[in-house]
Image (tube, rainbow, N blue to C red):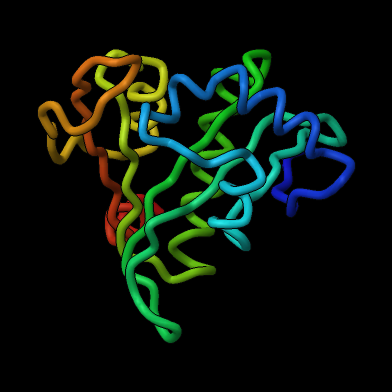
Length: 162
């Protein structure tokens, strides 16, 4: 079915193509990272998502809070090839979030979303995330002030579902 693997020379070009295609939905005007910089900054928490052997997208965690013994929270960012949007992304999200809580021990996962990105907000809500905040004029994107919504999911909410 699907699996999460570390980025490598076989899939870097696919990741780069997808990142460049959807960067405007992920980054703001302050972003100075190249894809290589992003991968380096988030390593080892940057994964490629495969469906069988086909490239489906990528996911990474950043702004991790905690210490060497215990994680508290992280921000998640995902990007999928359009042909995988829908049920596949929902199933991947459930699996990955469960992994974040059980394997890595996170208590809270956050997602920062531009308010007009209804596709991502729908995915987050279907995965159990709740809107926690609206940050007015939080950044600049395409030369204009940009709001950001914060969605959160807590470990105990996922454990209560299972």
